[in-house]
Structure formats: C-alpha cells, structure tokens
Image 1 (spheres, helix red, strand yellow):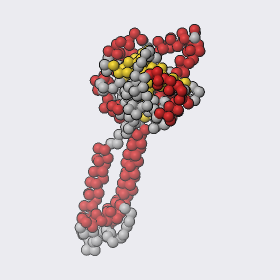
Image 2 (image 1 turned 135 degrees about the vertical axis):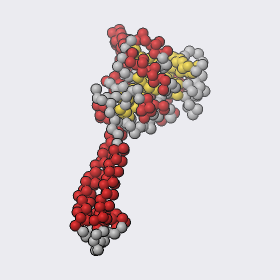
Image 3 (image 1 turned 60 degrees about the vertical axis):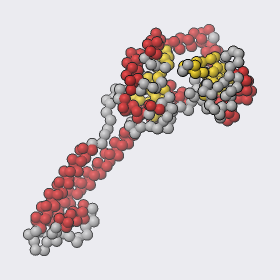
Image 4 (image 1 turned 180 degrees about the horizontal axis):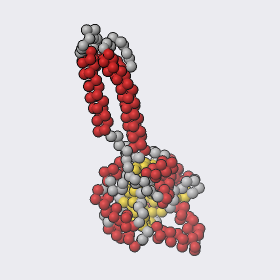
Length: 356
C-alpha cells in the first residue's frame, strides 16, 4: 500500500531563499558602492546607479553606461555575473517545481470536480471497477476516492476524466472528501474491505454528511438491519444475490439469463435492461392511468411498464404491476423494461431521460 503523501509547494522555503538572495545582493551592492567611492572616475555614485548596474547585469542587457572602474569594484561585478547564473537556475527550478506539483495534484484530484448528481465511491477494488463500468455505460458520472496512489493511474487508464473523477485521499479526511463534490452527489457507495470497517466508516461519515444517501454491499446479510439503523439507505448482500441467481440458473436457466441481463446496463440494441424514469411536469404520462400508459408505451416504443414508485408518507414505495386503476402523478417513477432501441425511441418521442 502506498504512503498517503500529497505534494505541496513549499512557499515558506521559497520565501526564505528569495530573502537570502535579496540579502546577498544588498550586501554586494553596499560593497560595490564602498569600492567605487575611492576612485575619482567613479560611474557608480548612488544606490540608484548600483541597482541599475545590477539590473543590467542580471538581465544580461549590458548597456555599458554604468560600470565599476576600480579593481575591487570589478571583482564585485564578477561575483554579480557568476551569482546571476545561480539565480537563473534557482528561479527556473522553482517554477518547474511549482508547475510539476500543480500538475501532480491535479492528477490526484486535489483540484476538485464540478460533477453533480453523481455517484461517489469510497474505495477502489475489482468489484468497484465492475460497478463503475456499468454506471459509466448508463451515462452516470462517478467520483472515486482511494487511499492507494497506484490506483489513480489505473483509474485514469480505464476511464475518461469527464466520466470518472479520481481523488487520492485518506478516507477519514472528510474536508478533503469535499473535493469530490460529495455534497451534490446522488448517492455514496461505501466500498471498503469488510463489514465491520464499513459500519464504523458509515457512522463516522454520517456525522459529517448526514443528509446524503448511502449504499453498501455486505458479506454477511444478517447485518442489514444494523446498517439500516446506522442510516444506510440501501444494503445489498452479495452472497444473497449470488445464491438466488445460482439457484435460478439450476432450475430455470433461461429466466436466470434474462434476469442477469435486466439488472445490467444494455450495451447493445438487442439487449434488455430495466430503467426508472422520474415523472416530471412535462412528462406526457403524468395524469394518465397506469393501464393507458402501459399500452401507449408498448405500442409506440415497444417498452413495457412493469411498476411505479410513489412517495408515501415520505418513504418510497415500489408498486409492482399494480392492479386496478392507478394514476401516474408528477414525482412518481415509472419502472420500465426495454431494449436499446426502445430507450432511443423513448428519448426521441417523449424526451424522457433515465435515472433517479
């Protein structure tokens, strides 16, 4: 595991070097004036003349209108010439160092992101990589936070910066987490190593960002209630999902194949998946009864309406294939099954976009 070390430009050190150089030049100017005052032919008479000579030398302009005429004055001038080479190197080195640090910090995500309504994933591993691929495929922007420096290069290799933002940070540095624009995220996925670590982290992060929605995957499905009591909105047991899918493959393999396709993003036009769309004021199905919307969607877009999500007493309730007369209202979510072509027809004909 890489050490968590972030490069910073050492402003204090740069100011000390600048002060030391300025002090050295001031001392040399004093010596130059002292050496030249003994000559009746002196050209450098005042501090202004000395500074002018210094600037001519420093900038390599060399007008020749003001010159030291004494032996020791010329020796001081020689020191000026040699010293100027070092000053050039110092300035160029500091500029190069500053630009390198700015570029490195940008790569590490320390410049922040402007993503909104995105997914923030705390922790990077193979499982997170798979999740991000599906989210990006569905057009969702993702911010990944990792404390392993090597992961930044991997993330940058896999994904474009306008789709996935990567931040190198200690997970408990909650001030730095704001670089991921976490306050404007639609949901935060806690993708740490084990359930205990996830639970402790959820409790800590909720203290700093109490109003966000959180989701975790669990190795131990018995901990669902514990995580929900801690404030996690969605808890998913990986073992439970795997066991259900495996059992389905054993006794109804065709259903299992279709189910696996439905819960993933459809990359090809012939592949199916399920989407949910929010019913906004301009949605043509707002105010229609479920049965009417069902047949209209099937006929016009070959899209199947399979359920509605309504907010009841401040809680989301999924109504699957509802019976009787149920009206679709603004603020509801329509749960739809469609292929890639159906999704295109839905966007073009009704200007409906997917997502929470």
